[in-house]
Length: 251
Image (tube, rainbow, N blue to C red; front, side, top):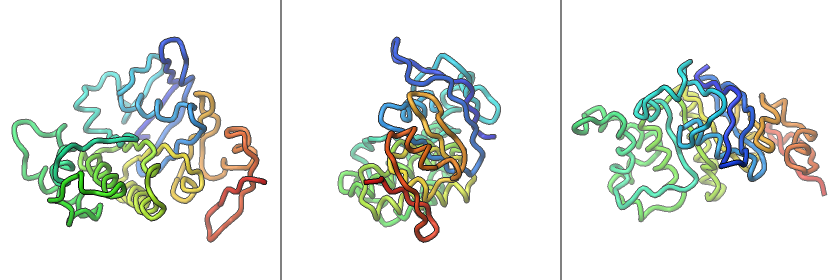
């Protein structure tokens, strides 16, 4: 397992947000983290990335306790795409190159440049390299932010609602890229999602949070009308559409 989360708990002051959270993730898996607003999804990935300091439990990356790793080691292992990101007044090339910061000592190396060029190509951003960030659309900017995380050459990629402000075309493009990169480079990707149907289209595994606890985890078999009713409080039916399950709320 590339990532192991064991009995992790986190509180804001005296208010518990995560309680006794347990799961494992393999290399190459795309895992959707689901649940209603306030269930602890964003808090969970911030704990994995050491942005928030959890006090209960253990998080391990490649069997190493993440609390015992240096910050630069965490940055080399884990790429993070937040809900909102400000890449500053930079060209697309320079904004993506910033992702190499954990590896740059005195100067930018040829490897840093070549890897940035390769990731721009993978993301379909080659023609945007010299454009400035403030000239981009929302979908283009999100691709740049994901590219900046990928150029870190991470083993784990954490994405907090990467499709939330995108139109349908860009949602599908972004998720296709995340899926392809995860499989090709054996990156474990954990994606906070609100759109369950989009999650069902792309995910290998699901972690459903309810009131800060893991309510259910597993493959597509855990996505049932009963699970959705318990986790979201909504009655649904699940149909098969062109090979994909489709969740339809009942009238």
